[in-house]
Length: 209
Image (cartoon, rainbow, N blue to C red; front, top):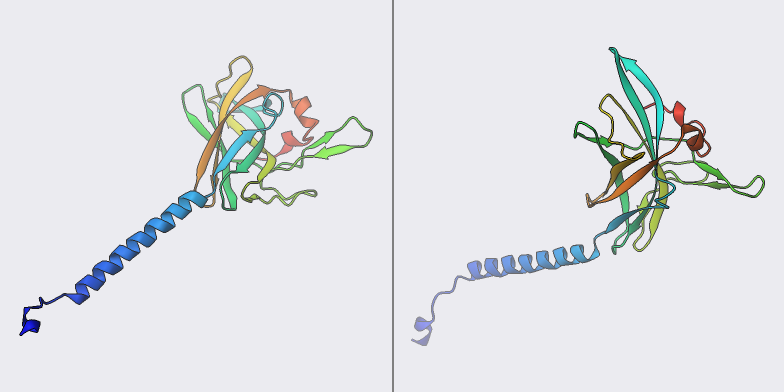
């Protein structure tokens, strides 16, 4: 009979193969959409010739060795060039020391920086990244196509000092979002006196580390 010449077909195997191919195609589509829509954070120093400062703090002695205290204050714009809203997870500062050691510094809490403008009794308040103050919520949620701006303060303390050249210290800000996407930006810190820095953050030399 004619039906006797029809080969046996493994319908179960064919269905499993079709399901696997469909899952692979869906996975490729999801990955393509994620790569297209993923957050793309970019970190940019604000007024790099002015607001990127390092300053000397009180030295301390331990076991007959003098340890240097150095503060770093940086003003940043963080832009989301992607198509998905995202929040910042971390923003660390990396500094290279004279012993060729990379030190990672986390941001510290500081009082809200305030700049007195030329007008009498007129002030400009500056946001501190991730910190709730009387004027800012401290939210680091960055919507697609938008940015968040703010200052960050870092403290270095140790016998192995950062490399200082012509009164400048080079560093690198490394940011990470909640999806672990990363970016970085080189910063050149200009030396400022503690007195000048305290005009912006009066109690910065009293902050515990």
